[in-house]
Length: 90
Image 1 (spheres, one colour):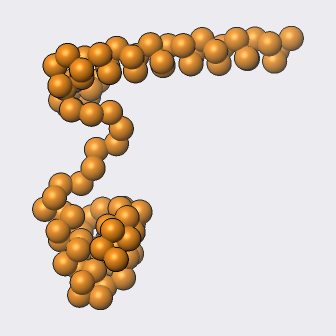
Image 2: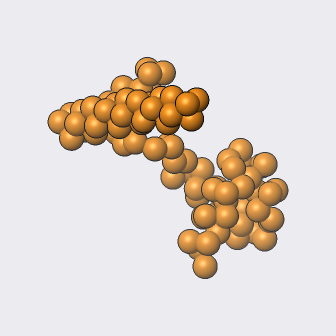
């Protein structure tokens, strides 16, 4: 019985999330941007990427032969971001 209630709750949560995403996507299609709950105006969904200036700095550090973890710590970005940039360089 508890499993049925849990499944129902999960379905309700999923419906609310999908409705919210649909609303945001409609706002982006209409205005080209939306305001997040934090008050930040964004032009697309998902995690924000790093600026081109930071990406260039990461590329320069990698070109000098520094390791992924050291570059991530020095520049102040995640090591996954550095790995992605390094993969694109090759």
